[in-house]
Length: 118
Image (cartoon, rainbow, N blue to C red):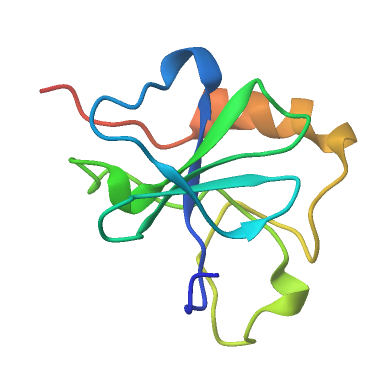
């Protein structure tokens, strides 16, 4: 879906996410997960994962200020190229079980990257 070695997103709590301009449309994949795209240029903007309505995966390229961002968790590494490494703090060969989410959330809360105050 990305035509790249990476698919970089930021998990944003749903209550902190708002589309402020335009009307996104569902992209080429019409499965359980809703992948929203810009209606004009068709760029992939964000995903609303099925049965996980507490967060939205926003494409990191949608950030106005992105220099602070660095990968914290990488998933599906077994499907990737051996040379494509992000340097993320946590790495999983597949999508991790929800059992590890509390640990990941706590680690991100304590050590995850943060935007700089302006």
